[in-house]
Image: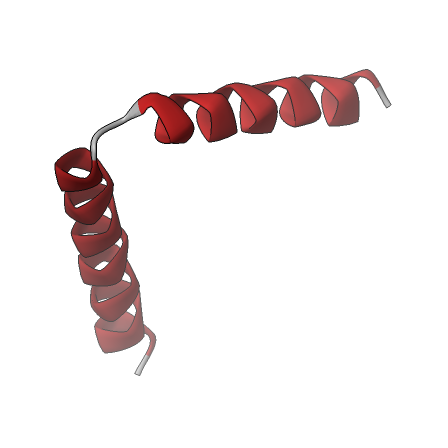
Length: 45
C-alpha cells in the first residue's frame, strides 16, 4: 500500500512538471515515448 501512495506522489509530481514544461519539451517527451513504444513493438514480434 505504501508503494501505491509513493507511485501516486510520483505521478502527481510528473503531472505538475509537465504542466510547467514548455510545449517543446512536451513534444520531445511524446516523441521519445512513441519511439520507445515502437521499439518495444519491434522486439515483441
